[in-house]
Image (cartoon, rainbow, N blue to C red; front, side, top):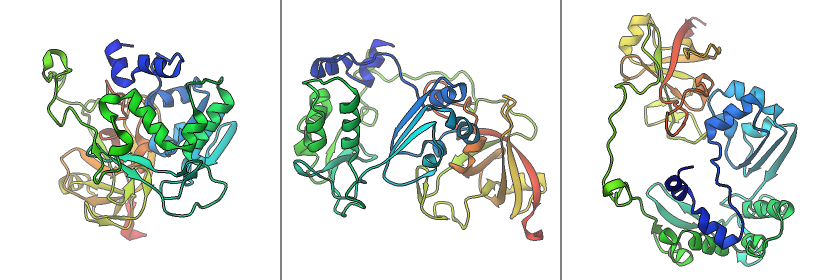
Length: 352
């Protein structure tokens, strides 16, 4: 791994000095690489701290079909979701305290930190009684697994960290003093504290030459596939009443839509070309060039102001149409904002 990139991701030398161990230097797997490994059989185990991986990934049907071949799956979670219903050969579902529940540990009721979208870090504590006396906190679960599997290390106080989260914040401060000096005092102040964002502050002092770099694109199109007759660009969207894969309701006030998420947004001019009317039901098929059949049925045609050649549908419902191989070149983020699809007209909804 490039030394500069390594330092940007984690101060490995500092971690080595603080905790007297040799941190791994090789790159881990991102989402796309994990999915590729599951399909290829090279990924053998999966441990998740929260999340709903099997609803968030591309190629949902293929990944779900391959998932039971994993040797081990472990899910640490506050609420049940789709990912907990599909498991490896050996599976553990470990329920844990949620952030709104009172977290009583050895040093007393605990406070955790959260970071908002403006890079401000706040204190957060639960005031609801736990759903069960048997629930453990996420730090206690992680520390317990570590204590059971790793050799003892006098510099790593798993039990102390699980019993007092202030000690965890002290450790974070020791590791990243440039961001977290005075962590335990500062995150309690009204509004929290601003961690810093160099791009927002236009601070490019650490960039080559101390200036921002602009790159000439290799092509005018960034969608990753060529235009072809009948091929549309499907962008996946979120409604205002969802958080990641969690859907709270069916009223999308951002777009004035309600009642269903099984809809296909398309502009009226494109509808006219295809002979479609509002309320028609269509299916979408992937037009990816990998030869794999991907199809989702039951979309209700809904007129919407979109560019020609573009369609809109909800995430994660449309992830079944997203190939694992369709991703951003450098970040390898799944490119679910522009999926190649074809429309299959099925029936008139009003005729049923």
